[in-house]
Amino acid sequence: MTYELTRKDVSRLRKILTELLDQSEADSCLICDGAGHVLAHENVSRHDPLLISALGAGVFAATRELARLLGEDEFSSVLHQGLKRSILMAAATDEVILVVMFSGEHRVGLVKLYTPTAAAAVRGVFESIRERGATGEDSVDRNFVLKDTADIFAGSAG
Image (cartoon, rainbow, N blue to C red; front, side, top):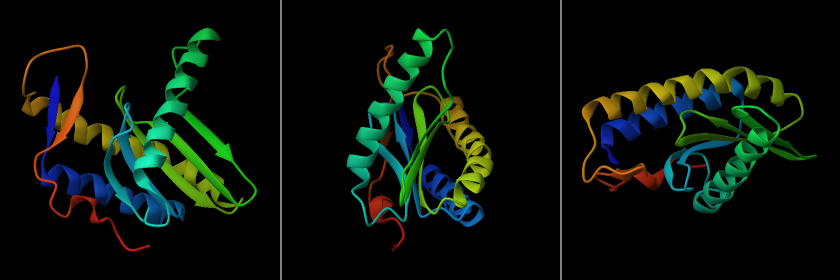
């Protein structure tokens, strides 16, 4: 199935990201699908959002498989904590991942506190997209297509 994201959907997603950045004091964040396609981002101008989403989706897929090997249904989040920079990836839906990048050891608690709420809000947006219906042929794969890409990938200046 292919789901269509409208300009309004992307605006709603970007609002969630902006609120997450404000609350968690994170540096940047993005939403991507399981294939690594960027669906929305905020403040990712210092880094390539396409590369981050592609690698993040790969890491998240590997982590899900590792969880299954260990007898878990899945791990809902993955944290990579470095000396200077860290990244938290959280499942919003089976197909959508929320990626939060931040610096500072003290912020990990804020990021872990506010990310589940943001992931639930993202899940709500995608539930409304599903309720609107899918376009194209039915299949096992689920893809998201941007209806109008003008100015969507502009992001905010960082």
